[in-house]
Amino acid sequence: MIEQQTISIAIVQNEQKQLLISRRQQGKHLAGKWEFPGGKVEQGESLESAMLRELKEEVGLSATQFTLFDSLNFQYDQLNLSLHFYLVKAYEGEPVSLEGQDIKWVSASQLSEYEFPKANLTVINKLL
Image (cartoon, rainbow, N blue to C red; front, side):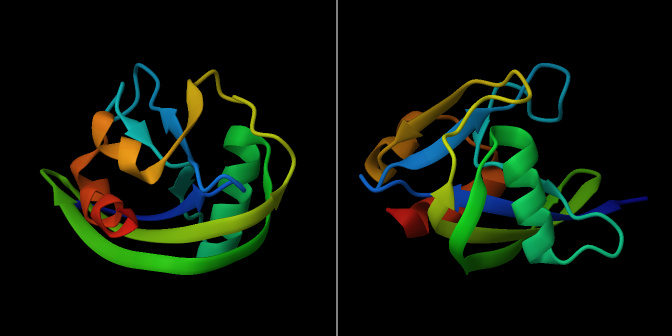
């Protein structure tokens, strides 16, 4: 049986137009790959609320200005993902690693230097 998951993701952009990425930790699906902060939408939670919660839980930021950038479906072997990417252009706080993950700011042109999950490649190409 194929598992269904809805994921809400924050593409955080700073004033220098750099994007915040983090590395998935060992023991997680796709460990070692880079990603944008985000995670599963919980039962009864809106896509926006999930993005805001995940951003706060993972890197301690509060998004104050954001728009839906892209939505897509992606199929892994036994996992069907519904992905929703929000472009965050204003936020409060400074990013910190709250889950022990590596985090860094990179320019859009540098994204291709990092290994992301296949599900992110369409969005990365749009950011370029």
